[in-house]
Length: 256
Image (cartoon, one colour):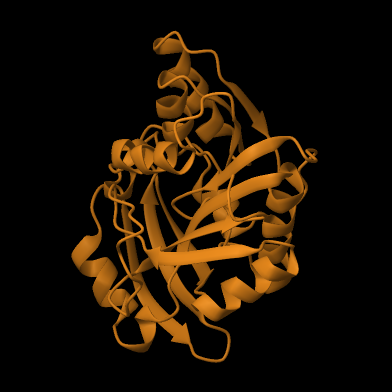
């Protein structure tokens, strides 16, 4: 039986690019470039690349990047978009919990919940972090966004989605479990053929201390966590209870 995140991204490539949360690509890539100190010799892996929006933008800026995802329809859309712009980008189908890479990349990115926090157990989520770490060189850096566990303690997740939802997806009947920090909800999505499907989903919210402990257990030495603003990532944004997502930057060393 397919998991909810597998069903969600079936035949959902073109419509995905119309969602409001995909509109921050330029600003997010500006931040990534700055974190790389604009060094175009560095190799990047985009984990959970989806339709390739960050991979494509970074390739246009001269970086070498490989995009991986589990969804055939998202990868198909990524390849078509790259081809239309005459870009040669390697997109590969992989489960982020079982990546074939080791010590290959200078930077790994996982943006817009690119796999991490969508898994049905904490152990599976940890495997994604472990595989991302394994893929990196010993001087590597990991940049990702994830759901901020401080937010649901002060706000209604359902109300947040009610005010933010645009495009082809709606999220309702949210129930946040304080024992597991998982939000159980019903997502309605319209796929690329115009078919609507209703999925029972659950997503894991993390608090900063958990993320820090998980990353330290994988050998990361420097871990910085900030609020994640759509299209405007910044080290100046201190994480607060108002941030729905957090931005995590982890280094094996203090410098890349």
